[in-house]
Image (tube, helix red, strand yellow):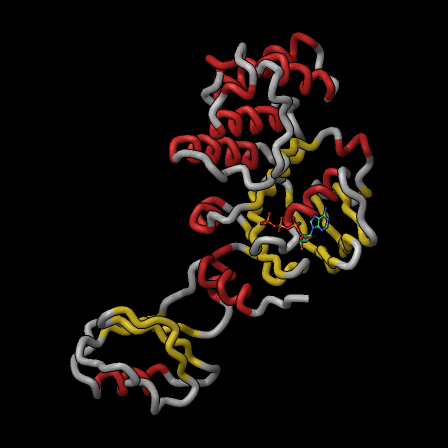
Length: 303
Ligand SMILES: Nc1ncnc2c1ncn2[C@@H]1O[C@H](COP(=O)(O)OP(=O)(O)OP(=O)(O)O)[C@@H](O)[C@H]1O
C-alpha cells in the first residue's frame, strides 16, 4: 500500500501488569482530521507516544505509506505531547527556532517559519519572553507552533484543546483544518466531544486499550439501536412499562427518549404515547458523539 496513510496496526503495550494497549488498530488518512477519544487511561497517550517513537511497544507496528516508521519519517511528525515539552526558561522565539533547526531547517527558513507561526497563533508579541512568563493558554499556542514550525508531514497532538479560551479554540481548529486540507493526516485526542464532533472527518473511540468504534461521526451516529424522542405532556412516569423491548434513556419534563430493541415497531410506541394524551413531538433521535461515548464507556472492562 503506497497511499500516504498512517497505519496503526495491532499495537500492544503493557506497563508491568497494566495492559495499556490490546492490538490497537486504526488508520489516519492523508488529508483527514482524526479525533481520538476515550476515557481517562484508555490508551490514547500511549498510542501517540508509540507513534512518535518515544515509547517502546511489545507488538504490532506503525506504518506510513506502507513502510514501517523509521527515525527519518518520525522526524517529519509534528507532535504536541500531553505533558508539554517546552523549556520554561528559554525564550519563545529562540526555542521555536532551535526546534525548527533540529528538524533540519536552514537558519533563514527557521526564522521565517517562526515569525509566520507565532504571528498566526497570536504570540508574535511574546517571542522575546521566557516560556514560563506566558499564561498556560499562550504556552499552549507556543506548543502548537513548536509542532508546526518544521513543516511536518504528519501531525499528532495530545489534547491540544485543553485549557484554551474560545478564541484560541477557534484559531487551533482553523489551523488543524487547514493542515488537513493541505493533505496532512492530523490525529488529535480530546475530551471535548462537541468539538470533536464538529471538527473531525473521522473519529475513533478507544476503550481499555482497544479501538471499539471508528468512522465518520455521522456514520457512527447511524449505527446502534433506534432512539425515539417523544413529547407527551400528559404522560406519567412508567408509561412505557407495558411495552416490550423499550428502554427509557432519558426523561426530562414532557420529553422521553427511548431506545428500541431490534424489531420493535415504533408505531406501537406511538399508540402507547397517544393513549396518555396529546403527543406534541415524535421522531427518531440520533445519538450524539457524547451518547455514543457514554455507551462505549459503560461497557468498559476494568482489569
Ligand atoms: N508510565 C506508566 N507506568 C505505568 N502505567 C502507565 C504509564 N503510563 C500510562 N500507564 C497506564 O496505561 C494506561 C493507558 O494510559 P494512557 O495515558 O495512554 O491513557 P489516555 O487515554 O491517554 O488517558 P487520559 O485521557 O487520562 O490522558 C492507563 O491504565 C495508565 O494508568
